[in-house]
Length: 331
Image 1 (tube, helix red, strand yellow):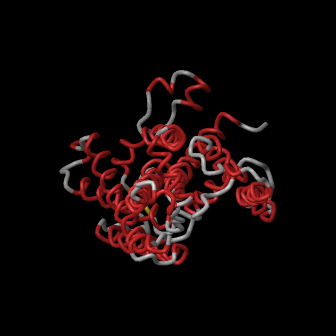
Image 2 (tube, one colour):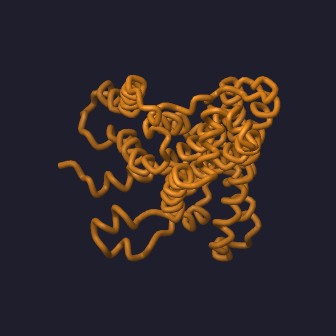
Image 3 (cartoon, helix red, strand yellow):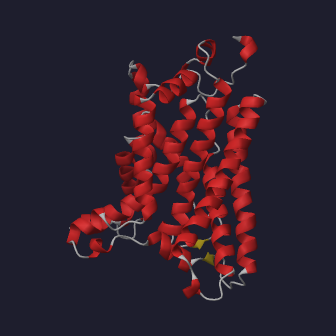
């Protein structure tokens, strides 16, 4: 019998990095910027948090001397700073210099992965580890700490109360982002910049500022997805090239949610479940069947993309100026 009580928490944990990545990319795309550098941004955010956690742990005389507040604060701020700089670099190239957004995003993804692997390998050597990974178990325990009531409330606690603080923060960030985009003047201005920057500019909206702010905030949110994967899902273990394709899945999730962060809360759990479904469905020794199950998230995305393209509703389409640099003198 399929074990939903163990499957759902793992699907949620698998989906949280996707939720943070897609929320950040949705805010970015709503400004008209197509940031294909999200996978690299998540990688840089993760390694920046690992560097902060490693330096803090190394400065302690013993693991017992660790301050849980600092153990969370230092890696989180380090992660946000690294991801912010990636977003700032992307904006400088695409908004200020008007470079091609697709090429810039792909270049930043390659750069981010190389940056993470270089510093990750360096930290592994500094730690003197005999294995090709770095373990920050004490820091991870602070991130993974959950409500004690979750252990005494049966299946309800396992399904809803067994996650670290960053998982709940991801849900809150997604819901707040959806509210801001749909219900506030700032969200209206941001959507207008993504739809028609020339019209927004003529209405007195600072197009460049909105693009910078939305992209940098989106990058910081996506960076938290990388931090969650290492500190919570992977129990504080960093190993090079361990992220897989989660960054690209985050971009696919933006299409799946039709550019609505609040829908991403449920969609990320669905994607996370599809991602690990092959581990729960018996397939014997037939590896081909397992590979077919692993294709499910991408097959679902393609189907949704086809359905979205066939619909004529404007709210189901991407921002009209997505991927197009804005030059004020050409309006």
